Amino acid sequence: MQVMPEHRCVVVGVDGSPNSIAALRRSAREALSRHARLDVVHVLEPGESSTPRLWRAAREWLRLRDLVARTIPRSQHLTTRLRIVYGVAGEALVEAAKHAELLVIGARFSSEHGGLFGGDTVPVVRDRAPCQLVICADQTTDSTASL
Image 1 (cartoon, one colour):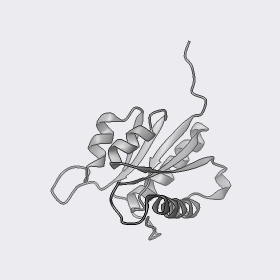
Image 2: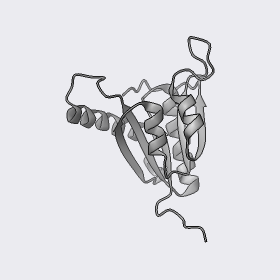
Image 3: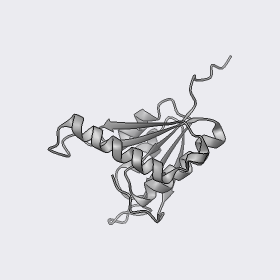
């Protein structure tokens, strides 16, 4: 007998880049089609700022809320949970997706050093994601949103 999780969810990592905005849009469509909650996660690396941790998290949460409001149409009737977490992006997203059906992230297609999918996040998430993974690469967006 298989036990179904109490809450179905799709997790998306968002940092305000065009690729993460594309990931947010894709994850919203996926959550709607799966009748799942959308968990929007923004990762803050510890020690990245001199602003006190609580104030920084509050400020980033408000920015994330505004970004989601501008990106996902209200007519979609989507249950959304916004999360600010501290840690290294790849590890934090893997942890956030621990009980998810799907993890969606954005990524540059290549790095300045010639590696496929630039940055350190994609290899960690690709190797350790506990669920299905979608990577949105080399997207553009009309908004200049940033977190």
